Length: 103
Image (cartoon, rainbow, N blue to C red; front, side, top):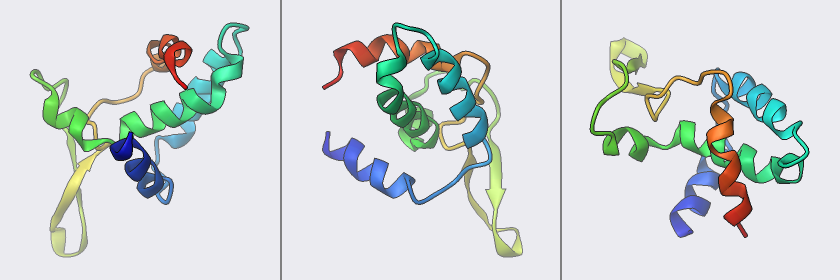
């Protein structure tokens, strides 16, 4: 819980290029009668997933070659997205059942 809350506060200060895509997917899943009350929880979890570097580190089989972000002077600064999983349509539906077991 401490890791989640600290990372969530840190990540709320950043906006990624995939945020609009992810949010539209969350809104589409939350349009269902079963999940509309969990929209805030699902939005936070899905956004956190795409920003969490530990997801990439714990994958046994890497799904794709990550995009490496570079800073000034072509110095690598990290991978994009941090989890190295590219969002696809209805990806949020995998998170939806977990909302029933949340606080």
